[in-house]
Image (cartoon, one colour):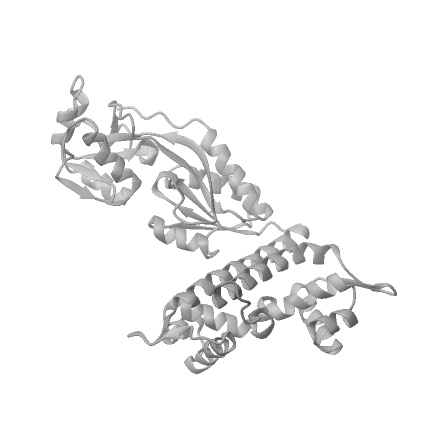
Length: 404
């Protein structure tokens, strides 16, 4: 597979497509014609597709090649942007896309991702000397240090982290290109990876994924739970295709696109039979006296929890358990008279009535935008685009009634 992740080979087919022939591409790339022909042959074998139609007037990309070349060009643009960032101050960086091999790129990414040579070697099931050689060879080609000594053995420099993000995005483009070639052959086993925040985990994600797999049973779907910062890092590196849940306003990093699906206020969730459910109209003081399970500090939901009380001249509750796990929240509520500050859609429908209830207490000013966050330049495959469409359909559909 390293053939498909060798940017220098991928650039060969891009230049041959532009020049309509090996001879002119040879002059432009300063490579021998046999080397170019060999690179094309290896890529065609790896893809299982002819890339060029050869004739008296030159070489012209096949339909499959034109489809794949769109991804190749986007991948090369990412790597070249990484080279410029590595050089800094607008200077031209080393042409790593023409110099480094696929093996070297994979070694470099593994060391960055796993934080050292030993853990990277274990993750890839490679000998540490061979992985060390590949990563250090790329460092030598870069002409600057990419790793520094650390307790774990090696630590990526900030420049290495920036370059790794670009290369990861480039690899993701190639993976999407491979999926598109398979889609062209009638296969529907494309991959989509969803980062799921709490507000999307209960209904939107499982419903949309179930519908996608009903249409495309062979689709490869990954669902990643985690803190927002972890999901954002995965999105920006191409490991995740979209994040579903509460949007951050303004966006926390450049190069993101956010699309709101709906607005949802927070609610007071308690156990069935909680005393507050029988109170005629509980006031803000009664809410402040409750013991709470609230979102983690430094999250938008926690800020709304705090602001809700302060905006009404009441000090926010002191007895608060910070928790983001719905399983743990459910247990805490069922075993006490605590209340939770949640969106109603986070409460599993089967728990309502018998176990939990949403108190009919309006919480104005706690509304949040729930939506989709992607990379701004993301171009989804057919499977990924269908996933987005299904998420939108589910978000528009009526939600189950939440009553006490």
